[in-house]
Image 1 (cartoon, rainbow, N blue to C red):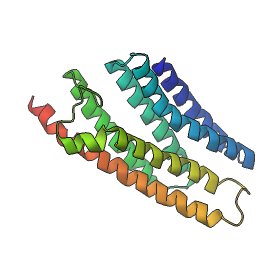
Image 2: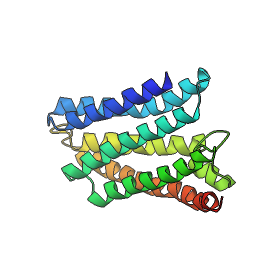
Image 3: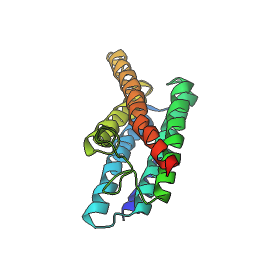
Image 4: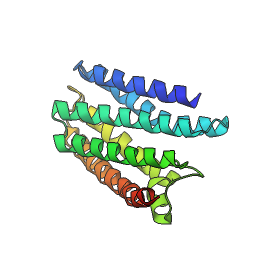
Length: 197
Protein backbone atom coordinates (compact mmCIF):
# COMPACT_ATOMS: atom_id res chain seq x y z
CA UNK A 1 0.00 0.00 0.00
CA UNK A 2 2.80 2.44 0.90
CA UNK A 3 4.44 1.94 -2.49
CA UNK A 4 1.15 2.81 -4.19
CA UNK A 5 0.98 6.03 -2.19
CA UNK A 6 4.50 6.85 -3.39
CA UNK A 7 3.51 6.11 -7.00
CA UNK A 8 0.42 8.32 -6.76
CA UNK A 9 2.52 11.10 -5.19
CA UNK A 10 5.01 10.86 -8.04
CA UNK A 11 2.29 11.03 -10.69
CA UNK A 12 0.69 13.99 -8.92
CA UNK A 13 4.00 15.88 -9.15
CA UNK A 14 3.79 15.54 -12.95
CA UNK A 15 0.22 16.85 -12.78
CA UNK A 16 1.43 19.91 -10.84
CA UNK A 17 4.11 20.59 -13.46
CA UNK A 18 1.40 20.49 -16.14
CA UNK A 19 -0.92 22.71 -14.05
CA UNK A 20 1.79 25.35 -13.68
CA UNK A 21 1.90 25.69 -17.47
CA UNK A 22 -1.76 26.80 -17.41
CA UNK A 23 -1.22 30.32 -16.15
CA UNK A 24 -4.51 31.07 -14.45
CA UNK A 25 -5.10 32.05 -10.85
CA UNK A 26 -7.31 29.07 -10.04
CA UNK A 27 -5.00 26.54 -11.67
CA UNK A 28 -2.18 27.86 -9.50
CA UNK A 29 -4.38 27.63 -6.41
CA UNK A 30 -5.12 24.00 -7.35
CA UNK A 31 -1.38 23.36 -7.86
CA UNK A 32 -0.75 24.88 -4.42
CA UNK A 33 -3.28 22.52 -2.79
CA UNK A 34 -1.94 19.45 -4.62
CA UNK A 35 1.59 20.41 -3.54
CA UNK A 36 0.54 20.43 0.12
CA UNK A 37 -1.09 17.03 -0.37
CA UNK A 38 2.04 15.67 -2.09
CA UNK A 39 4.32 16.58 0.77
CA UNK A 40 1.81 15.21 3.29
CA UNK A 41 1.71 11.94 1.31
CA UNK A 42 5.47 11.63 1.80
CA UNK A 43 4.87 11.27 5.53
CA UNK A 44 1.78 9.14 4.97
CA UNK A 45 3.55 6.41 3.00
CA UNK A 46 6.04 5.80 5.82
CA UNK A 47 3.27 5.80 8.41
CA UNK A 48 1.21 3.31 6.38
CA UNK A 49 4.23 1.03 5.86
CA UNK A 50 4.97 0.97 9.61
CA UNK A 51 1.33 0.61 10.61
CA UNK A 52 0.69 -2.28 8.20
CA UNK A 53 4.10 -3.82 8.96
CA UNK A 54 5.07 -3.54 5.30
CA UNK A 55 8.45 -1.90 5.82
CA UNK A 56 11.12 -3.30 3.54
CA UNK A 57 14.37 -2.32 1.88
CA UNK A 58 12.51 -2.12 -1.44
CA UNK A 59 9.93 0.19 0.12
CA UNK A 60 12.67 2.44 1.49
CA UNK A 61 14.27 2.66 -1.97
CA UNK A 62 10.91 3.33 -3.66
CA UNK A 63 10.19 6.09 -1.14
CA UNK A 64 13.54 7.77 -1.80
CA UNK A 65 13.09 7.47 -5.57
CA UNK A 66 9.65 9.04 -5.28
CA UNK A 67 11.12 11.87 -3.22
CA UNK A 68 13.75 12.54 -5.88
CA UNK A 69 11.29 12.58 -8.76
CA UNK A 70 8.99 14.96 -6.91
CA UNK A 71 11.80 17.28 -5.79
CA UNK A 72 13.55 17.38 -9.14
CA UNK A 73 10.28 17.95 -11.00
CA UNK A 74 9.54 21.02 -8.88
CA UNK A 75 13.04 22.49 -8.92
CA UNK A 76 13.45 21.97 -12.67
CA UNK A 77 10.10 23.58 -13.55
CA UNK A 78 10.83 26.46 -11.16
CA UNK A 79 14.21 26.99 -12.85
CA UNK A 80 12.59 26.75 -16.28
CA UNK A 81 10.15 29.53 -15.35
CA UNK A 82 13.01 31.60 -13.89
CA UNK A 83 11.51 31.47 -10.39
CA UNK A 84 14.74 30.08 -8.92
CA UNK A 85 18.30 30.29 -10.24
CA UNK A 86 19.38 27.33 -12.35
CA UNK A 87 22.15 26.52 -9.85
CA UNK A 88 19.49 25.67 -7.24
CA UNK A 89 17.98 22.96 -9.45
CA UNK A 90 21.45 21.67 -10.38
CA UNK A 91 22.72 21.63 -6.79
CA UNK A 92 19.66 19.85 -5.37
CA UNK A 93 19.63 17.34 -8.24
CA UNK A 94 23.37 16.64 -8.00
CA UNK A 95 23.14 16.20 -4.23
CA UNK A 96 20.24 13.78 -4.67
CA UNK A 97 22.08 11.71 -7.28
CA UNK A 98 25.27 11.59 -5.20
CA UNK A 99 23.51 10.65 -1.96
CA UNK A 100 21.35 8.03 -3.68
CA UNK A 101 24.42 6.49 -5.30
CA UNK A 102 26.05 6.16 -1.88
CA UNK A 103 22.84 4.73 -0.45
CA UNK A 104 22.74 2.16 -3.28
CA UNK A 105 26.23 1.04 -2.27
CA UNK A 106 25.08 0.80 1.35
CA UNK A 107 22.01 -1.18 0.30
CA UNK A 108 24.28 -3.69 -1.43
CA UNK A 109 25.86 -4.23 1.98
CA UNK A 110 22.54 -4.69 3.77
CA UNK A 111 22.11 -1.15 5.08
CA UNK A 112 19.28 1.30 4.46
CA UNK A 113 18.98 5.07 4.54
CA UNK A 114 16.61 5.04 7.53
CA UNK A 115 15.37 2.67 10.20
CA UNK A 116 17.05 0.00 12.27
CA UNK A 117 19.54 -0.94 9.53
CA UNK A 118 20.55 2.64 8.71
CA UNK A 119 23.94 3.27 7.17
CA UNK A 120 24.46 6.27 9.45
CA UNK A 121 27.05 5.32 12.07
CA UNK A 122 27.45 8.60 13.90
CA UNK A 123 24.78 10.01 16.20
CA UNK A 124 25.07 13.44 14.58
CA UNK A 125 24.74 11.92 11.11
CA UNK A 126 21.67 9.95 12.18
CA UNK A 127 20.15 13.06 13.73
CA UNK A 128 20.75 15.19 10.62
CA UNK A 129 19.79 12.60 8.03
CA UNK A 130 17.49 9.91 9.30
CA UNK A 131 15.77 11.24 12.41
CA UNK A 132 12.07 11.94 12.17
CA UNK A 133 12.72 15.50 13.36
CA UNK A 134 15.19 16.20 10.56
CA UNK A 135 12.95 14.63 7.94
CA UNK A 136 9.93 16.57 9.23
CA UNK A 137 11.80 19.89 9.23
CA UNK A 138 13.09 19.28 5.72
CA UNK A 139 9.64 18.24 4.53
CA UNK A 140 8.19 21.39 6.09
CA UNK A 141 10.81 23.59 4.44
CA UNK A 142 10.08 21.98 1.04
CA UNK A 143 6.35 22.41 1.59
CA UNK A 144 6.81 26.12 2.26
CA UNK A 145 9.28 26.61 -0.60
CA UNK A 146 7.23 24.80 -3.22
CA UNK A 147 3.80 26.06 -2.19
CA UNK A 148 4.82 29.67 -1.52
CA UNK A 149 6.65 29.91 -4.85
CA UNK A 150 3.50 28.78 -6.61
CA UNK A 151 1.44 31.36 -4.72
CA UNK A 152 4.01 34.11 -5.28
CA UNK A 153 3.78 33.65 -9.04
CA UNK A 154 0.04 32.94 -9.26
CA UNK A 155 -1.39 35.44 -11.75
CA UNK A 156 -3.46 38.12 -10.02
CA UNK A 157 -3.70 36.34 -6.68
CA UNK A 158 -1.89 38.73 -4.37
CA UNK A 159 -1.94 42.42 -5.08
CA UNK A 160 -1.06 43.96 -1.73
CA UNK A 161 0.81 41.22 0.09
CA UNK A 162 2.62 39.85 -2.95
CA UNK A 163 6.06 41.10 -1.86
CA UNK A 164 5.65 39.46 1.55
CA UNK A 165 4.66 36.13 -0.01
CA UNK A 166 7.57 36.38 -2.43
CA UNK A 167 10.04 37.18 0.36
CA UNK A 168 8.76 34.22 2.43
CA UNK A 169 8.95 31.97 -0.64
CA UNK A 170 12.60 32.80 -1.30
CA UNK A 171 13.52 32.55 2.38
CA UNK A 172 11.99 29.05 2.31
CA UNK A 173 13.78 28.16 -0.93
CA UNK A 174 17.21 29.02 0.40
CA UNK A 175 16.49 27.42 3.79
CA UNK A 176 15.52 24.24 1.92
CA UNK A 177 18.69 24.34 -0.19
CA UNK A 178 20.89 24.78 2.90
CA UNK A 179 19.09 21.93 4.69
CA UNK A 180 19.44 19.75 1.59
CA UNK A 181 23.21 20.23 1.57
CA UNK A 182 23.58 19.83 5.35
CA UNK A 183 21.55 16.60 5.28
CA UNK A 184 23.68 15.27 2.41
CA UNK A 185 27.07 15.86 4.01
CA UNK A 186 26.85 13.06 6.64
CA UNK A 187 25.90 10.56 3.91
CA UNK A 188 28.97 11.58 1.91
CA UNK A 189 31.07 11.28 5.08
CA UNK A 190 29.78 7.73 5.65
CA UNK A 191 30.77 6.79 2.10
CA UNK A 192 34.40 6.38 3.15
CA UNK A 193 33.39 3.49 5.45
CA UNK A 194 31.50 1.84 2.62
CA UNK A 195 34.46 2.13 0.24
CA UNK A 196 36.84 0.65 2.82
CA UNK A 197 34.61 -2.39 3.18
